[in-house]
Image (tube, rainbow, N blue to C red):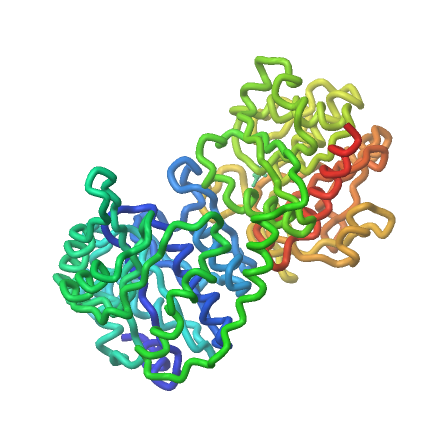
Length: 553
Ligand code: GLN
């Protein structure tokens, strides 16, 4: 076992393992994030981690249709979107050490094997793979009271087995007073019987028991309230104390979940499990205030998101949330109109955009739908509609101005064609914390983008400076291409200013159009840092501008 495993014994963190059963997509990430937030409301320090059983090293190379959004941490890890839930609910920035996949685990094991670290042993799932998982769980912990580890997938999945074995062993090593198993299940409602069914939950717990795990708590998702006698039945058959069968009734907004959990007594029961005193007062006022605004907004504003994964909203999870946060800050509901950018290539944009008060073009990769994004940007520019372009959306905004205002018809990005006017080009070298990062066009695709938090310096004479209220910002990046500084003068003459750059002045970070009421393109992903209780200033301002625009109609 590695040093990490021994180090942890001097540490007092308690581990909560969250598994899921019955069906996938039960919202384990949200459940974990909400539990963390409820524990925080009692004054505890928390950390959240995700263990994903798939074989990719990270989700960075997966299609958003497969996996939804790729979340990026400050320290440059491409991770599961659940880390976004974790940050939005707990406010604790996720780190590289908070996300692992089977691909990463195996990569580590194989690297060690090649180095000869195993001293001739036969390498096996147990103990070598499971030890690597245990090391991950126990590593990089400081003064946290609770570390919540969510196991991806559903109990019974072949890929998940080494993880269940690893968490069983961690609980065995640390003792039950430092570990807890929470299992999230579904109680299906059968309308003809008028009942919630407990059998799938019983089976799911049995499956978990086969792996040597006896859950300490069940969180049961259901459409209707869970009757006390059903609770009793679940408790008896699943070998769980009745008060540890927690009903998780469907709620109208995800931000109600921490409040609902607390009402169900989840925090008290967690404390009881660990035998620690639970501070009397849980302060949930920040969630209550947010829910109050969501339920009774002062108005509604319609904003278009023009992208290519609009069929799967998980692909734009953080954008969806950040717009909601911008709405909350303005006491407005943001109604998002998801528009497939390909539709704008074939039809009159008025058909889709005439009724929106703001247009957002999100990040993206590849050819499909790019011309439609450019149509949407031209529409926003010409009709004075507030526009926010994020990453690819910013790059397309620059291309739109170069093509339609400067008249450079071949303006394009080298991501899509090498023979064009390279207004957006491949980044081959940049500064990362004082050192140089290098890339070539033939390099690997996985993990090689400009990733994570980078500083930018804002022009004091700009709209973004007034929005951020500071000259120096740090935002998260995930891109391989960048706007070519060579075109800065032409852009400025065409009404588009580069108003933020990397500290060495080499990389453009933000563009805006001073002649437009609100037209901003950012090379980074502000949506990743927005939280309901700390909305991102760009989203607050963008939603505000959209509200003002709708008032003018
Ligand atoms: N495809 C573009 C790039 O790699 C933009 C990436 C993004 O939008 N996240 O630079």
